[in-house]
Image (tube, rainbow, N blue to C red; front, side, top):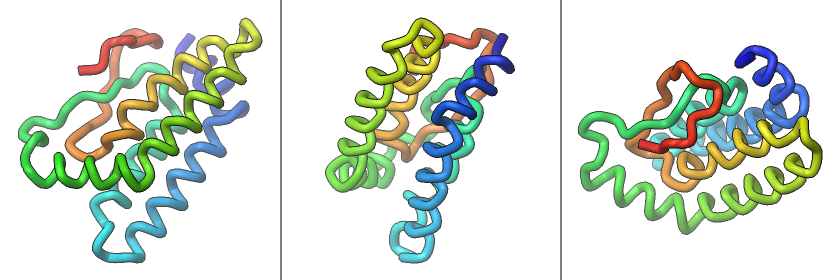
Length: 133
């Protein structure tokens, strides 16, 4: 089931979202100072390609001063706008019954798009994980 949902996700939006995050990662890495956000963008891009069966968790020891400050800067500069985009896309996907799991996956991307530093993506046994640790 996870594979089928991931393929549908990839065709109906996941590829474009991943390309957007990948482009943002390239731009951030070119600017040298923003390399941590570029690496986080690449991590989110990989997650966006195949979200079902994976979840976001806090990295061990990833709640220090730099990730907190970096996440605040990210939130103000880009995170809030990306989250709004995910909410609007989720609403559009939820209009159809087939799109409801895709909308849930889109909403699942909001926490990591708001505060990407200090997070990691791990596999799970369930295609729909609602808990964000």
